[in-house]
Length: 159
Length: 193
Image (cartoon, rainbow over all chains, first blue to last red; front, side, top):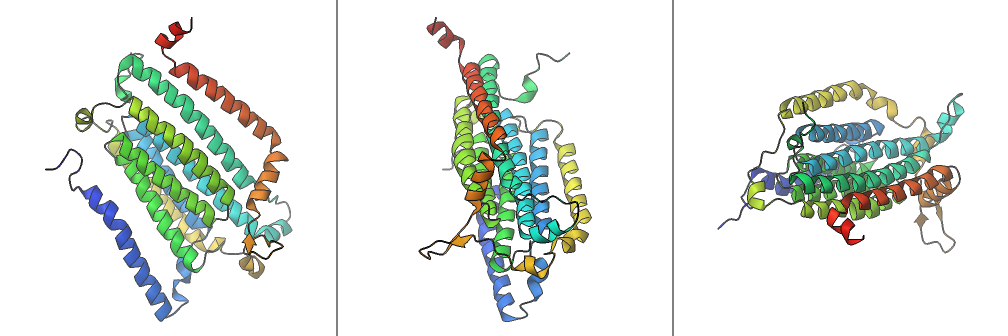
């Protein structure tokens, strides 16, 4: 009746129920916001710190993936997660500098360049694409020789 | 840089979805599922870029990252695919999973406690900054707001950042030659001689 991998698992329940729960929670919050005090939710409004926190948490998830998986391709994908976390950080700071540019430039000794965020992010994306191409070429030639993609089975150089 | 109203709600939704997709990338059993979760995470990151008024980078992310790099990942997963029955039983994690997860949790919690006093410090520095909505200028025919982000990024890439731009094209050429050289098997080399 059920195929391999189509069991009703916890991950399936979480990944389908999470958007529904999110929508319900968001709807209740917005309804209460409109009904009662409109100023109450101002302290939850995200600032730069929230973007930095998101970037850091994504980075930490990527690092945990790099350190703990056996499949080399999943390790590559965790590295892409790390690079995206850095991109979020750069663009958030660029937006912050763009908004506060007049105030910050009035302070002596500060050089404000908000366009460097997107430009550097584009170069990070380019380097990530090049690295993915070469890295996956290495994975293919490694798979041809050893018939495995698990990193702890590539141990010819171990003592 | 304070987001108000619906932008705040959208930020929390996108941030939560990105993190959940990231966790699923790291913990999926099959590599194809991991790639699809990463595609979802990258699309969420592109939406965050649009929320931060960086539309050009969002477009580049979708075109290059999702449309190029992830498709390449999927091709390679198909090439090195082990059989589904083997993959359903293979060991997923190295022996150092628990230290990695504990370290990640510790870092996350400590960062949260370190940065929450700073929440007040990054609100708009003055009233003028709080009024800025970077929508660019309306075009002559009055069709609404056109963002100047793409124009600014293009000008910067071809003026201030022209040298890194050219070096990036050279880097891509090197990567292309290297990838072809690595992936060509010995059978194909003999074919060309």
